[in-house]
Image 1 (spheres, rainbow, N blue to C red):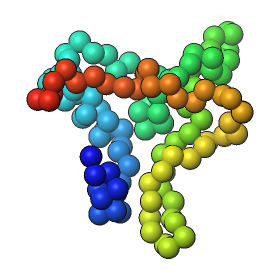
Image 2 (cartoon, rainbow, N blue to C red):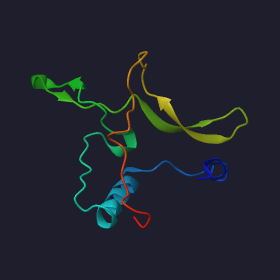
Image 3 (tube, one colour):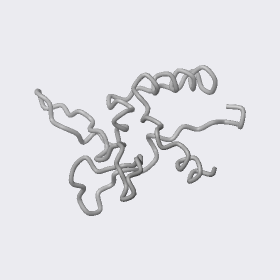
Image 4 (cartoon, helix red, strand yellow):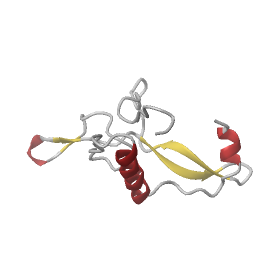
Amino acid sequence: FACEEYAANDKNKELPTLQDWQLLQSQYNKIVNATHSFNDPVPPTMGYTLTTNGAINEGGTTSPLPPPYHAKYSTDNNGYRCRGIFASRNIKKGELVHDGTHSNILFPDGMS
């Protein structure tokens, strides 16, 4: 996929906004799968729901929490602006933070 070349040549690309994600989801529904639901209480700019073992609300119900990491920009030792994934809280040793089951989208063919 030439990811290294793409990343090296695109130092100013912004992180997707909520509107960007909504457009992508809408296009996926139009082109690939009209019945797929993007119904996650965690906004795509914060990740996705990995588990329902979240914060306890009034009344004893739980809310899903976003994953314990987020995308943001940083500056490397040479002063280059870089995008990456950073922990948003302490992560316990052995804690599952991603398993791929809730964030992967399948495209049935190359035209999709």
